[in-house]
Length: 299
Image (tube, rainbow, N blue to C red; front, side):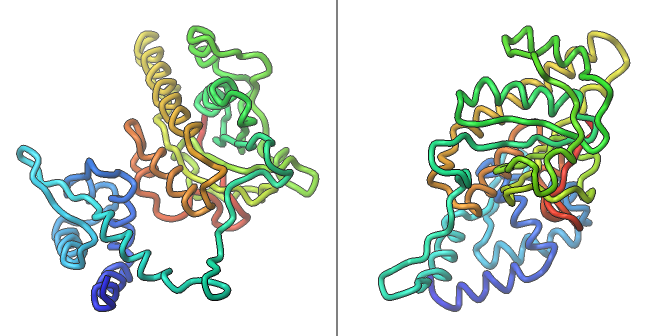
């Protein structure tokens, strides 16, 4: 990449709306998004959005393509890769000696399972299902825990029923206060994931271990109350969404991913089918506005 191209790309990304727009398109991947959905996700008017899309496209950071009656916008990943290569080409401690970023690995040493904390406020449905799925499907490579800021008295019975029907053990699953994972004597957390939009941005404790974090917003199945069958369908849907995410999660090569690469991969998983708008277009970091990595969600 030539210096002039890099300057143009960086100038285009120096504006807040364009940066958020570009990161959104990176998250949704190669299938792209139409302008209407982008505007809804970012809260930007159509006229302003057109201006920002044109600016990013002129800088080579996004491309547009027609799909039936819609025009989809897609991040130009090849151009981004060339930009990153241009920026870090001379990054080293000494001639010929590059400085590697730390990989996501347990502080206790190689071979120990990664500790994953799944967060919400009620900790009674989605985060509980995610904990059970990861415990089994992680095949010993992960230790899964869940907790909430205002845990309910008990796990939703339908969550336990759905898990049991799919062959997932439910023994020991219970709502827990997230404060047990805070403080100097708390267990280390390597990865922290929020499962709901409800309290996105809420201050939370500082997790031991400075975990890599991401937001995996999933619709609340317990909010569906119009009929028993509709409620069951909502829980089944949430279960399937969570299982697909965890299937992608356990396939990640954490022993080879640095923290930044891992965070991007986790965000991509959070933007998979079934994601909430805040999962694919977060206004800021997934965790912590004032006290460290933040928790999220109601259930």
